[in-house]
Image 1 (cartoon, rainbow, N blue to C red):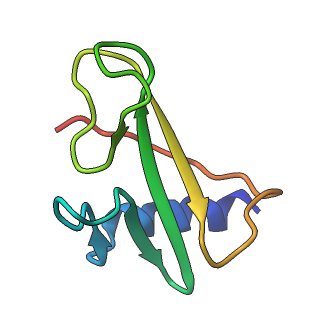
Image 2 (cartoon, rainbow, N blue to C red; image 1 turned 45 degrees about the vertical axis):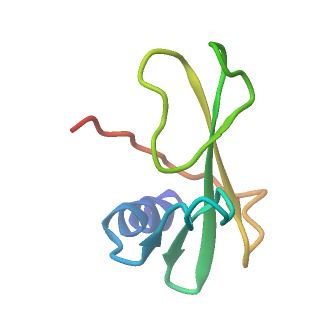
Length: 88
């Protein structure tokens, strides 16, 4: 069960079909397409000068953040997802 989720997670981060912020008048959702599943990636600033401000393209550098992943097409409520954050 864990092996397919690790593969899906890797495919998500290696996928070329990733769309970020749609411009100043677009929504702030990062959409990631993995096979038949569409995932929405969101980030929120935990504390700081603008608490609760939504971030999509650029996450804050100097504070803690909350990262949220929602599935738009599949029920992931009873599945484990492995998320790996890499610093460039």
